[in-house]
Length: 131
Image 1 (tube, rainbow, N blue to C red):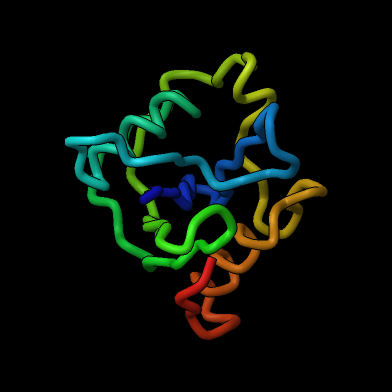
Image 2: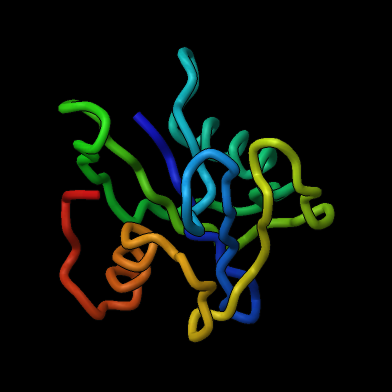
């Protein structure tokens, strides 16, 4: 199982990451480690990928079946609006670029899954159960 976050700041900008090992701009997140809850994993991933600490509740947007790598994988996507970022994340071998982007000016290469989750959040399309 994996977790992802739609992190929106006070200016309604979204935090996205670009990895070294897969193309495109993605919602931050990753795999749930053994013994972790989804929310603990979400908090850990946000710290690792964006120096972001949740300071309020995360709202579940949906649970999505992701059959790209397995016939049993699911991704829980949460909306995070209350947080503190200690500073911009420095690029490294895993995250080569990250930052906040205007919803009306998303970077080229924003993934289809990211765009789909945003369209669902904004009520532009019906929620899907597929990644």
